[in-house]
Length: 394
Image (cartoon, rainbow, N blue to C red; front, side, top):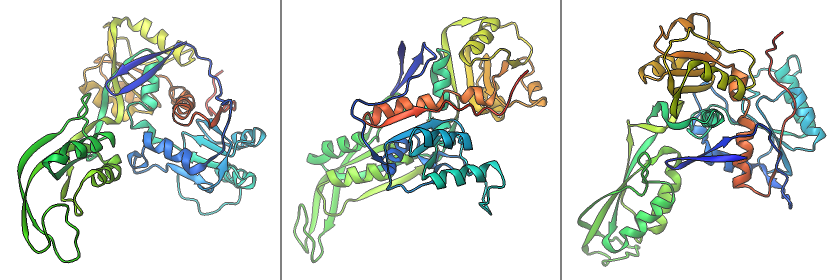
C-alpha cells in the first residue's frame, strides 16, 4: 500500500511497495498531445529548466490525438519499438533525446536512429528533465519518498523566480480581486497561503473620450477610495495571475505594478533537504539505500561514526551540490555520478553516498504516471519495460 506524507502545500507519496501498475481507465479517452503537455507543464514549467537543457516536445504534432503514453527514463530505439507494439502515440521521457544540436538526420548514431524510428512510426516524444528536477515534488521528492524522508526545503533555491504584484482596487471589490489572485496560485509564502498586504488610499483619474468608466464621468477628474493589494507569486504563473486579476477587477483599465524580486524561491531549485523523525546509524542508512534503489553495493566516503537524521539529496548528477550540502550541515548527501576526486571534498563532515545516476532516477516514470493519473484520470499511461541503464556490473 501507499502512504501519504504532507509537507506544506505538497503531498508526497511514500512507496511501501516497489511494484508499479499501469493506468488503464475503465473508459479511456484520446487526448491531444498539447493537453497532456499542459498538464505536465503546470507541474514543472519549461522556464524552470537549466540553460543547457532541452525539455519539451521534441518530435510530433501537439494537435495530434493519442490514446496512450509510454513513460520512460530514456528514449531509445528499443523504447520506440515498445511504444509501437503497444500502440502508444506518445513517449514521455525524463532525459531528452535531442540534447545537443543536430546537423544531420541520417541514422548514423543512436540518437538519429531513435528519432527516425519515432518519425516513421508517427510517435511523438516529450522530455521533462531539469524542470522536473527543480520542483520540490519532482524527481528529488520521489527519492525522498522512496526512503521515507520528510522533505523540508530545496537545497539550492533559485533566485529571480518570484514576482510582487501590486494592484489598486475600489474598496468594495478588494476581496474579489484578492481571492481571484489566490485561486490563480498567488499569495503563497513558504507553507502559508492567501498572504497579502493591503494599504488604503485615494486614487484619482479622468476618463477620456470613448471610455466607459466604472465610476466617475468622462472629462471629469474623479477621486476613489481604493485598496492597494500586494501579493507574491512565482514567475511561472505570472500570466494566469494577471488574467485572473483583470477579470475580477471592475475597472476598464487596471492599474497594477509587477516587480521582479531577487529573493530565492524556497520550493524551486536544485536538490532537497529532508529528515527522519529519528536518527539511524550509517550502516542502517546504507542498507536502506540499497533496498530502496535495488543496489547490491553503494560507493560512499569513509564512515564518520555519527548518526544520520538530516539528509540532502539530488537525483542524477549532483556532485556540484556537495559544498551546498556541507553548508546545510546535513549528516549525509545522496546523489549519483560522483567522480574520484569529489569523494575527497566532504573531509569527514558528512557521509557522501553515490547510488548511481540511473538508480536515483529510475522511479521518475512512475512519479509522472501518478501525476497524470491524478490530473487526467481518463488518459491511459504505461510504464516502459525496456531496460535503458547503459551501465552494467559483473
